[in-house]
Length: 408
Image 1 (tube, rainbow, N blue to C red):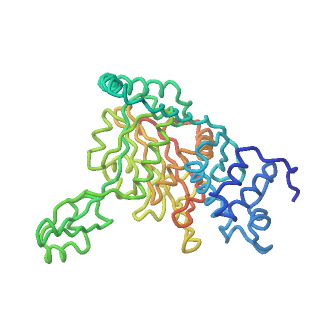
Image 2 (tube, rainbow, N blue to C red):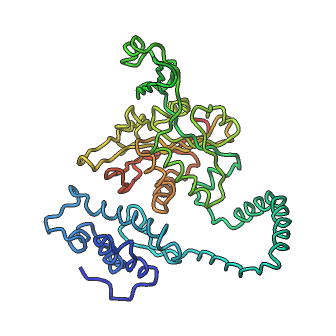
Image 3 (tube, rainbow, N blue to C red):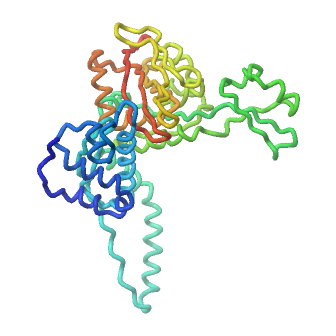
């Protein structure tokens, strides 16, 4: 394969390649240099594996995820670099999900720190202390106004949001992100300071506790339990925080709430973003039951209740190796009862992968492409496959998209 002409990399690439962050990762450094040199070529996984990663000619991308794993690690290493050593870089390397090609983005330079004041002679320090005290009291009085002014400025200067998010927040309602707080049985046979917490993943309503397989045996040993909803799911929490940070860029205000706080009632006056598995999303079950794409118990497949021509009736979990898994999931934007507020459902074992699809240019472009095929509906439900290598996201792709009408 011919390579691009040797051109000196721009400062945005040089500052990464020459950094300490990448000095400690020679394989990723070599991969980055290769991708830069091949930026104008249509490169395959085979080419990357054999020319940049040292794999032999027998490499087969269908059975070997090396390239996708290394690209994913390169994205993570770049993110680490720009958070730490490269925070001042104004040209930044981006590798869109599902792509092997690097892009250069320009960001605004951070404001330089203000110089420290010169030391003050002792003769006047007392008077300055008094003046500073007066100014501090005035600052307290102006604090609230300053916060409002900054918030207003942030809204004014926020970049234009992608179409999907413009539509979701277009009703200008308050929006809450619901974190699942699964049902636990709290047994306290020796008093409240020695509580034993039990979770049965098939039980998502405390009233259904008698259906738990070992419930009777546990109650005989430890007595009747109390309801406990003290914990959120770690992966869903990280997904929610990532989504909040993304939406903040466009000045879309959100509030994190527990699934124990009646999200159905909230939909009377607020938008709701519900994150979790089909089980932990039980608080919005009336909406899930009306959908044509349904995530099964334990998230092993998505069932297509009304497959259209050419669509699969089921999108299943695939274990390609002990570490490499393809997980099904569902993204749905639904009209809430009354028609004014909106419900966004992210249902998967890997909710971070769904958030990534909704917060990256590549993922949003894929969603827009499928929406256009269906006439660009405002409301839709979509089945997604997310390939994971351990906890690292390799990539996600949309499989099926169905339009949803406001009357559904």
